[in-house]
Image (cartoon, rainbow, N blue to C red; front, top):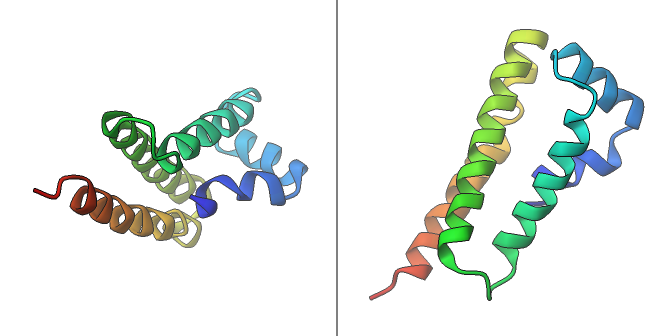
Length: 105
């Protein structure tokens, strides 16, 4: 989760705004992404939240990372397009073990 949520808070704000504009997204999209990332992280990390919500949060993060990869690939080149695939791979491993631990018979 840290690889997905924290870059929004530690990267320079001007860089983030410039990246959003370069990718062709509206200015408010950055705030929307920040809010959704925090909500998704909270849903996944709090044990009392039902599994169904956690699975949808995993799906949303997967779509987010794959979309980010495609957008950066098209706008900035292959090297920047591959970067979001690293947290995506970690997310996939996390989801695998989440399923394995959640659905033990």
